[in-house]
Image (tube, rainbow over all chains, first blue to last red; front, top):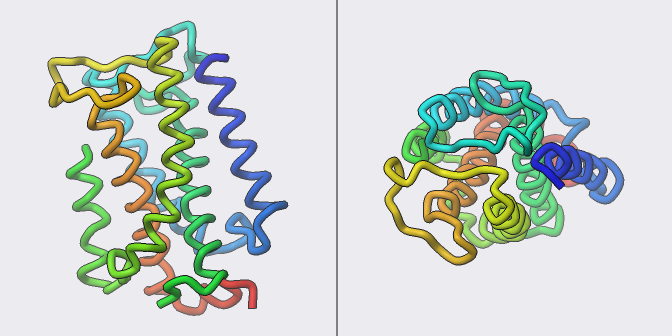
Length: 101
Length: 103
């Protein structure tokens, strides 16, 4: 498996879990999409910083090769999966009554 | 980058009083299981050479599974920023909390 495969898998799994496993989907809520809209530009900015300065480098054989703001397209799938699953977990514990306020 | 993210989201805790850090148990239990999965991926990708890092631009501390310290910190700081963001959003737009816990 290369970065592309794992990124697509992580994205798909996080979406499936959110829609079908968690009772209260993040993907159907305005709060999630507004948060993601805030996070996305920051991700692009920090991604650009880390990749354009070659702090992080990618094996050309591990990625499709399409880049956005210097970073591989795969990074957006990775970021989406990370943000969605962490917010999903945060809501999951809240729903179970843990430290709601 | 980590400091930028910490500052960029940390002010929400202070100004909007999102109270995420106060709810440490919930934050840790939300971040830890997800970050562990992503760190397994990170270890695999590093081992397979999917990505690599410029040692001259790093602190130089390498943790278990050849994962640099910065990567471990990344998977604490970034998820925390995500939680701070959605809590910030729902603090400003409280009506979006309706149905939050499926009630």
